Image 1: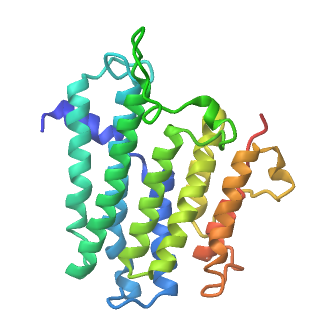
Image 2: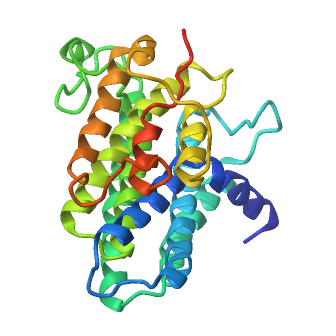
Image 3: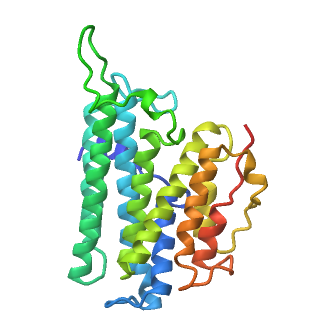
Length: 295
């Protein structure tokens, strides 16, 4: 790959310690490791080696998504922080490289062939959905020529969505799909049950929906996704959390998403206690209470 293309690819991959998807994948693996024995369990000493390539694959997929979304929103090229535009073809090649790299990295996961096949299946399912969502955004953004008939089966009528969750638009849905894929893959890596995997998928989707939408309204403040990622990665993190009453100033849609995340965790309480705030489940619960900035 040409150096300039490699540079675009590398700069699109997020720092792991600030990536909520990477954090969700990691903690999902911890939850699955603690609560499920599986038929091919990892030993405590090998846990990090098992999860490392999987988390790397998630960050590569996140870089791919970031580039694709930027490409779709750019007009005639990419601009990064006011810097020079990046050639569109270079960005496409870089995103394709990251997409392929996510699959290639899974080959390095030290698990059984059967489990690796399951990881590929989950990644394929997630990346296919992401591609469909990106294509849907392109279709929705295409201008309609004068006199051209709009197919209401393909385009969304704003009036029909009046009662929908106002924070869930296509931007956040792509991020939420990435997050739920990360959670499912992290849990599957250590042989978690289907029930545990589904629970962590729902939690991840709800958390990303809430935090990504809130982040879009607080761009000048600390990104809530990065705050949640730090809390999930670091059991000793003392980042402030807020009470239910203090969460009242978040938008109703954000609060509903956070409540869905907490409800999802309730399915795992019987299998693993979350009273210890440093435990995987304790950190997942605390992450639903990261501070939200007043508007």
